[in-house]
Structures are given as C-alpha cells and as structure tokens.
Length: 188
Ligand code: URA
Image (cartoon, rainbow, N blue to C red; front, side):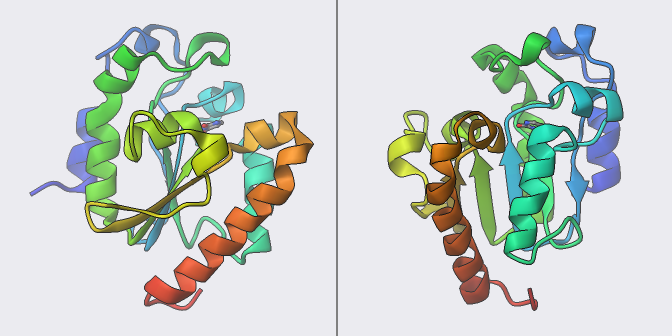
C-alpha cells in the first residue's frame, strides 16, 4: 500500500535525471491531498525552484487569479508538475527527464484519486492524455483516462505571453466549473 509519507520519502533527493544536479529545491506538490480535482503543470520555474512550491511565480499568480474566478483555491485542489525539478533556463523538460520523473506523478494521481484532472499546457497534456495532443485544437475537450474526467487548457505562462488566448482559456474555466458541479460530490 502506497502512502504520502512513503512517496515523499522515495521522491526526496531524487537523482534519476540530471535536473537533480542543478535544482535548488525539488518541487513536490501543493494543495489538498484529498481533493476531487487535480491540476498538473509542466515543471518548476525560477520562483518555484527557490521556494520549493509549485505555481508561485508570475504564471502561478495568474493561475491563482483564474482559480478565484471559479471559486477554487489550494484548499480545494491538489497541484503538481510532470517534472519535479526546474529545467535550466525554463526549457521544455526532455522526454528522458519526463520518463525518469513519471513514477512520482503517477503515484500522486493514485493517492489523490481525483475525479477530475486538468492538464496545464501541452507538455502535461501529452504526458497524461495522449502523446500527440494538440493544445490549440484539443484544449477544453474532456477525455476519459482510467475512469477520470481529464481536460487540458492553456498553460498560464502561454496566457501571459499571448493575451489573445485568454477568452478561450476562460471558456475552459467555465467548462471546468460545470464539470465540477456535475461530478464532484463535495460542495465547491
Ligand atoms: N510552470 C509550471 O508548469 N509549473 C510550475 O510549478 C510553475 C510554472
């Protein structure tokens, strides 16, 4: 039987790939481990690497504001990344790094056991939904993955870079709120 203590212990000090050589902190996850909804990002940026907490830099601040719009905060969801250590200069995590880190996110998903997963951005969607996921075409669509309701939306960093994507991201947020109301049993 897995447990959070066991998982955190196994993951602490991980050196399965070379991101372990350059990280300041391993960024494990944040929020409510007993939540019905889980958000999955790509990998830590500079602030996350410094603080050891996911989504606390500029993208994280936008993400928190987006959550507020649908009455969510970190007491109501769990959030983690595909890779737990910052890729140098915020480059995309390599496949070999994602593969090395895969066990941790799989075990986090299994322990949280969320009804809904929202992937933030292409890297997360390709790791969780399907390898050839196209974020511009397929964001906002619901997929059944192992009995969970899974959707991808734009990464908040993409929304900082390109404001024109924000109306579509807002539609995705509304769809997330609707799905929560229909499949989650707790009051949100
Ligand atoms: N971007 C991510 O994908 N994850 C973080 O934790 C921060 C920025």
